[in-house]
Image (tube, rainbow, N blue to C red; front, side):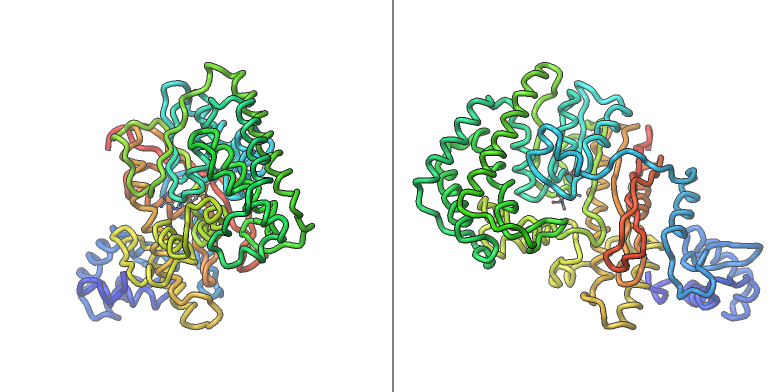
Length: 506
Ligand SMILES: C[S@@+](CC[C@H](N)C(=O)[O-])C[C@H]1O[C@@H](n2cnc3c(N)ncnc32)[C@H](O)[C@@H]1O
């Protein structure tokens, strides 16, 4: 909340405390500075501290929370340790333990089903499996992931015998998850369908290229022609699970057949040119990988759960009854994270899930805001009460605005509003998960922090603060790994696992 909008008495008081900076100011000094009676100053301070707008740091000594622990002589920069220490203290938690297992997606590329779709932004199946074990998830339980991505949680939950609910807004990811649950397809039938498709593609005329302006630059002429033939032949395959697996195989080879690389953003790369036979070979390998894994799954028989319920929709509202979910596990888009729509436009365009740039922009404006969100969407955004009421966030937004006003190097002048909208977009999702979770149920969140416009944004901890306001208890924070900031390579960011618990009675 800007200082000016505090009720009379509070604004001047806050301004005086803020001016005094990290050294703080006593109630008596405040009474003198503001010309108000000491009793009124003290009662206003009590009220402000109830809202955590000011902090008592010593006998009668007050500061604005943002100044607490500011490195002396620094430029007002608050870093990871400052926020972490306060977060743990306020939530009454011990120091963050280190999670020593694998958290990233890479090892999944060796695992049945997970390896059907290479997905850089996913988390490890091993982490999910550990969580399912810890919380005793087995047959009859329901496990939810509101930001499902490639469906890691849903696959592991089903392997554990549970019912998975996978929510995902991006059509390509939702269709990947659906295909990743087509476990009743016979491996022989899939191999046959794959071979037939290649045979027909060889004698089919190439169809029209997708709408993306860059298509001809993205592929060699030979690879492009083969992909257009494969796609035209695919359009004639009967709808059903076999077709969804063939589409998944086709989508999974697009980047490998192109001049592009995803690491993690999609961009041009120096790599050997793929000729006209390349996509056929890659497609055949992709189909074979799936057929091999379907054979493995058949051997598991009775122990696996029902196919996941895949909901292609915005996670802000969930069409589930209250208190039906036993465990929720997710990894939301990170603050200042990936522009998923830009990154997966290639597959969405080739699969016909997006038919124009307008389709892509519409989708992007529905997703949790990233720093590529359209200025129009941001222009129309007004912060909600939880964002207005979070003093960490307000301090951070103020710092971002101040840095942007003083330097011209930043790409977006509206970055503070993007950050505010990012967190506001998460609030209804956290609320929905809270509603559908059984009392005592856990919500595990793999998340990260960021450096934006010279300001440190503890995205994971702010998620925790918002969750507390929604009704969760913060049970644990573990640090999973260090990451490098894209803004300053020497700045170490964190990836963490936050365990939230819905209290037994609220
Ligand atoms: C970090 S990824 C999740 C990765 C996942 N844990 C895995 O292992 O594959 C976040 C996902 O959230 C999705 N997403 C973004 N905004 C959404 C929204 N409003 N509703 C549902 N899904 C959304 C993105 O499309 C992306 O796939």
